Image (cartoon, rainbow, N blue to C red):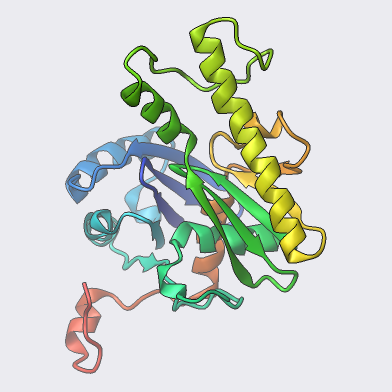
Length: 272
C-alpha cells in the first residue's frame, strides 16, 4: 500500500491507497517542529481504527511546500514504516514538460495538481487550489505545466481583516444568502465569499483570453465544493487532486534507494 503525505502550510494530509481505492485520509495541523515520533503516535492510532498496520505500507510519497517539515516526515517513513519516501520535486519523471523559467521553484502541490488533473480530466485546463494560498495553474493540452497565478488564501484574508481592523470579528466562511450584508458579520462573509468568486471569475477569464482558447476549470482543496456552488466558471470540484497526484507520481518513478543501501554506495551521496 502507498502512504501519501501532502504537507501544506496549514495542514498535513496523510492518506493510504491500496492499489484500488483510498483506504483512509487524516489531517493534522502543520507544525515544523513536530517530531516523527509525534506523527507516529497519532497516525498509528488512526491506522488501527481503520484496520491498517504499519507493515501494510510498502511505499511512501511526500509532497511538501514546507521544507522544515520534510526531515521529520522522512524519518516517519523510514523509522516507522521501513520505506524510503519518494519526495516530489521538479527533477522527477512527471510525464510532462514544466515550461516555466525556474522549474525548481514551482511548489510540489502545483505540479501534483497538474499531473492528476490532466490524467483525470485532460487538458487544456486551469486547476484552482483553495489552500493557504489560492493558486491557479494552467495545464496545456499535452499536459505541460505552463505556470499560473498565486493569490492570498481565503483564511489568510479572514485573519487579516480580523487583526488589522479593531472592530471586525473573526468569522467563518460560508455562502451568504445575499450580497448586501445587513450587519457586520454578513457583510464580511459576503465580501470574502463573493469577493473570491469574483477573483475566480476574473482571473479565469483573463487566463483564457491570454491562453487564446477554451480551458476546462477544476477546483481542489477543502473549500472547492463551497465555491463551485457560487459560480459556473468552476466546472468540477475534486478535493483529492493533490493526493491523486502523489499516487500517480509514485507509480511513474522507481522507489528511492534506502539510506542504508545508499551509505554502502560511495558513488551516491546522501543529500538529507
